[in-house]
Amino acid sequence: MAGYCKGQAHLRRLYCAPDSRCEMIATCDKAYVPCLTFTPATHSVAVEPNNLASAPRVTLPFPAIDLAWCPFKSGENAASFITTCRDQPLQLWDVGDAALRASYVSTNDSDYHVHAHAVCWFDDASHPHWIAGGYGGFEDATQVRVFDVLAEGSQPAWTYTAPRTHRLVSTLKDCAWPGTTSLLAIGYYNASTVHMVDCRNRCPAAELHGLKQGVHTLRVSAEDPLCVYAGGTQGDSRIACWDLRKPRAPLFTLERVVHTNQVFEFDLLPSTSSSEPRRLVTSSGSGGVVMYSWKAGDAPDAGSGAAFGLSVGPTSGLAVLDAETVVVTTGSRAYSYDSRNLPKVQARHWPSKADETLGEGGSAADAPAFPQYKRPRSPIADCPDSDDEGEGEISAGSARKMGEVASAEAVNVSVIALK
Image 1 (cartoon, rainbow, N blue to C red):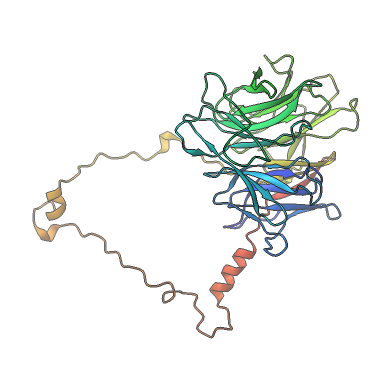
Image 2: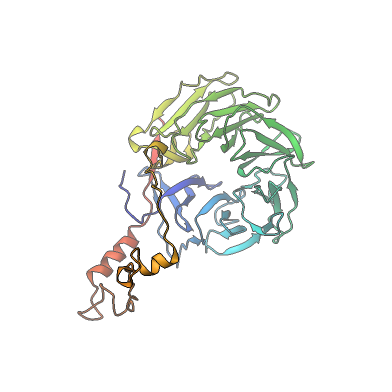
């Protein structure tokens, strides 16, 4: 695994294209959306360089919070995705030319513009034109606003407000009650319950209880359409599975190591038939990924997972390529402190205005010397890396900067084989 350099982009969450698992987009700590490509021949994944002529990048004023592919993307047809970004509305971007196609604006109860913290593009065949944004908070009682992708503007198709709460939405996932209606699963940063919303009547359908902290990730299973999976945050690192017909307690929980507030993603591996064992793979703070396997209709043991790829270090983002291969983002940094070790602030005497002017003795000679700040010279005249040899030569400083820009692509991504 390549080392991390200062100024280099750091990938966070991965999103595979619906028509090709080898094509991915990601969130990172830079103000753009990187595209990644998996090469089966070399079993490697790499970030595509920014090419303004052939493959430009989507640029944002701040790093993207969440992304969502167009579910009916097919090659270059309908090749677009939605972004959520600080101080920005929901924005629809074209993959080919990185052009903005539409914006969906929201305002809170104080009539200020607000940005979404999560986004979901409905995969249901009956509502492929719905885009759900997760909001909430102290000044916004509306948790979810659903827009029609064909109706750009500030008028949502419908909204959902959870009763007696001002929770902040962290994740959204669409699912369906078999043969009846579409459902929307909602997770919150500061609540342990998962809300299931009936998209037909715009009302609560169920509340899934069992976690202790917030919810970071939601997943549904194609083989078990009545099951919903949710991953907890730091303080409750479990993954819980519910049957929608029994929402009061989870069917089972799975363990993983979570040391930080990063989003530790998980996903279900595809199965060729409903009788095959169910398999779930999750990122882990202890390194690599952990895979759980259990028979259909049974419940796995919480600590029965098998670890793979421990050498890549702690992982957070995860994307499933096929039944035997996953791509993960690596790296972790913890910020902790102990209040007992913090330096104690000594009480000090704040001098009066006269003391500050004349000093403690009252004479002008004892007055404190204030620092003198010199105005910097022009960057052109004071440039340490200016070209003194001529216009055709490149200085060492300029070459160093060009090298830093060229090597700024993210490298914290690895491919793990589940064998």
